[in-house]
Image (tube, rainbow, N blue to C red; front, side):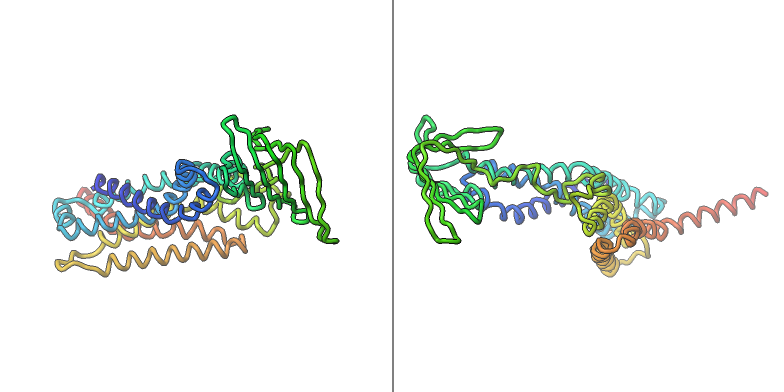
Length: 367
């Protein structure tokens, strides 16, 4: 049973993660294709999002697999045979609990280390694509959009790397937008920043206050082909912060209004793994607790599904409310742990009570 649970969990999680990756990666097709980048860059960029997908769906797939495998075994009378052989509810639930524990530990690993690291690398890679990488791939006769405010056109690119017939539309300063022409130029890399040295050209700007055209002739000029922002100036997203940054944010970079959201994100990472165990316990209680029905029982699996939907909705509600009122954060912890404890009591308490009664009877006989 444990082997079936693990194999089904791997297949289900992998399939759902691939489906989510396929739908989410479409957002970056225009970013990569529009800058003339290769398929390898697209795959490297989007693959960095996969760990975050797995961390989100793993508790849900753990519930689905546990419910499906247990329901199938109940329908095939395998659980009935195991009960008749003398296996206790704890013995029947042990494979599901072991699988849920493995999911919980894996979710801890994803939330606390893998997801923040991979998402940080994803944001950096995306920043490089938007502001740096496209500058290295200037094509002949193509208007290359290096960034949202910088467009470059070259008529010819020689084998030596020299550029001929260059036009640059520079809108980085909205008040002084410029159009630059040059007969020739050369690409340089200075401190990992792409720059082009232009020769024999002109720079044209329009003074918006007077409407006059300003023309500047030059024999040599250097243009930085980045958006003007460095990676250190890029604002960090909550998903790429460490727990220390979430619970103790820099007051100079994070406003007091956003501290609640960061704290909720930190507690979400710490409590989400427990939901994997709680969801599995809901599935086990729905199938293992109760009398056997020869004609099957759809109400118990349906009630388990509705319970999980309700818990997910409650979790989202509590996170939104706790972001505004940090006094509600303990409810996030309670919501993730309490369902698993309640299900454990419902499933194992009859067995524990029967064991105590048998022990009391045995002690009475001895006395």
